[in-house]
Length: 296
Image (cartoon, one colour):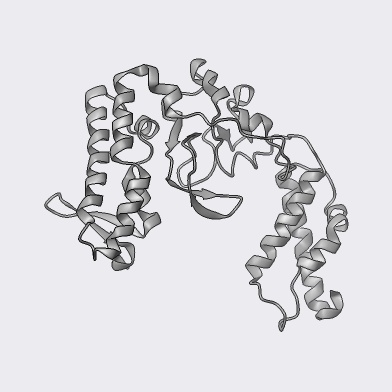
């Protein structure tokens, strides 16, 4: 590879590799020297490195993303055990399984600590690095606003505040072996398990799911173009019902907004962006559905 481009470019690449190696080793809590890490994977890194300009089809960002992923994989392999580095905690909160029911019973988790991802809701798949429809209803621990960090992760001391009673996913997954099958998720916890015995509140959840399913919403949104926007009122009915159910439960039962996200999932209006839509409120208090590009 070195012969493919000049010594200055190669020298810069090697220097940058050392900095990347130091960074990933610190991140995963490994005590291995950067030079040792680089030596163990140099052949792979040479293959991933920049090619002559006439042959290169990747951007610099894409090149370094591939290099960093390989370095991270190698760095994790140098310490096959949990060192509480916080990397997992900062890249998405855990999804709860049926075995995590006891965390609510022990009050380790409270209703406002979690939220529901409903079936059909658009979610980001970190493995595929793209947005996909959620296949099964899931309940997840909340994340710090604007971040992917679990609310129980304490950055100041890099520790989990519920470590001794952490969810099953946190206990079993092995971040140092991303391709490991050690973590085979059991049936995810869902609202039926939590609320079916609660009577009236479960009936309200069922009615909301019946009237505001993502399957039906997606179908109506897909009809917009075919009907030249004439079916927009159908979508507004979904949004209106979702809004008024939350308002009713909040006022009548005194339930806070965060707990509503467990009972009914996140507000439907927050998902419109995945369809390229946004909801605007007019001065008269009515709402209008608009393409995001129309506002740019």
